[in-house]
Length: 189
Image (cartoon, rainbow, N blue to C red; front, side, top):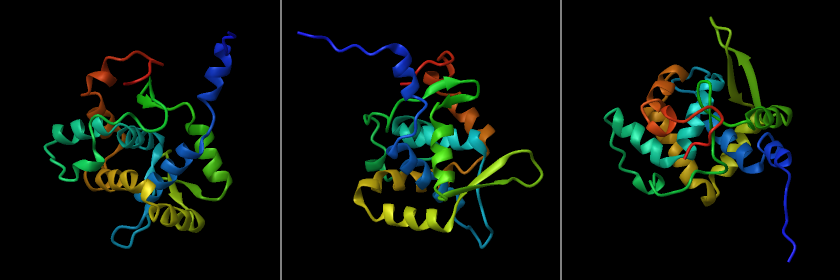
């Protein structure tokens, strides 16, 4: 019997590639946070906030723990199944907490296809992400598909309770031992 082996460098390269699942999830997340509230245009403010929100979106058990930690009890528990495995691939610990090495490729794909745009954040050196008209239309179509109901429900929970700065979200995540005690480049459970 022949055993299939793959060299470690090839496996590592796959972590930096975009996937349709990641692109869909981030498009829905960016759209959920760039929809207008009270008539004012919005954007998802920066990669740190994007990464922290994506972590909580992908890891429902950690989302539930963060919400409980700040005194919020979510009734819609069906989309926060604590036993559910993380969506897509696992994130790794990096300098400012959870990070996915594919973010640059995923954001590049969304921007390159004209689904997401970036703009400078007023008064800072940061960038904001928002969906374009085409991106909004695609996100609306995706939300009609029952396959994305759990993701969309979690995004609504995130926007309602955790629309905070990236720094504040980072502080919440460092209360989780799985994040705080992990070493750089270690996958987070």
